[in-house]
Image (cartoon, rainbow, N blue to C red):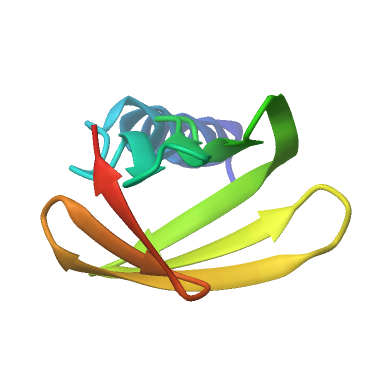
Amino acid sequence: MKKSTILTAALLASSAVFAEEAAPPHPYVGMWVTADKHIRHELLPNGRYVEARGNRERAYEGHYKVTGNYIEYWDDTGFTADGTFVEPDVLHHAGMILYLK
């Protein structure tokens, strides 16, 4: 394989990665809270989340993936969870209902 072909393939691959990273975030990015504001999930645009519980501002942290209206969470400690966005601003997660703030 010619060096120019290898270089072109490498440039195309890096461009695809950059384009994926530069894509706009999904509409669910933001702060999600229970009605009593005890549980707060912040979905960050980089695929990470931070969950606060009561006075514990960083009770859980990890990454998440949204597919359609389904969300999967992977906590940094190995805990997993999931949820479903039932409306643009309502999330059902682990027996809780959270609202986009």
